[in-house]
Image (cartoon, rainbow, N blue to C red):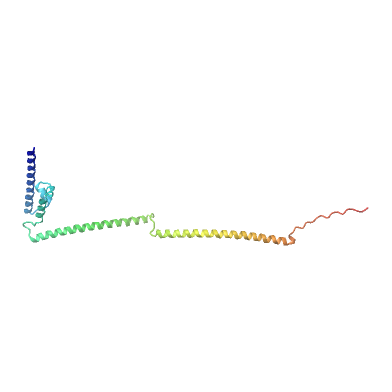
Length: 199
């Protein structure tokens, strides 16, 4: 049983070494042919999964190092141009990201502005100075209430003055009738007949 496990372990180690060697060989072949060297391209050409290269740090570093090297038949000017192109691509990618974010913000602000304009145009939205008008209406309503209360007090004072005036006039009229003899009733009594004393 132990011998079987040992044999299986040796077989796995041998298979791993065989696939590692194949990856390195394919890497060198791609570099010699001037083809692009990436983890995906090397794994695809070697017939292995990308995870094999990523799991082995030395294998992954070897692929990246060879990818950074210039092709054998490339001139210095070509290599510089390739690096400058990569830098331009990186800059353009970053710029596109910033522009996309800016466009998204502008679209959001435009949508909010159009929605507000449509809301106000429909007559359902409140005017821009609704707060000022509401405050002014509240002040006017309070003034109306104060004026009504003051008017009620004036009405009560007027009613009391009228009542006092009527009482005063009644008292004056009553005193005048007591002092005026013509205003008294004259009671006339019928003359009594004198007895007849004739014989």
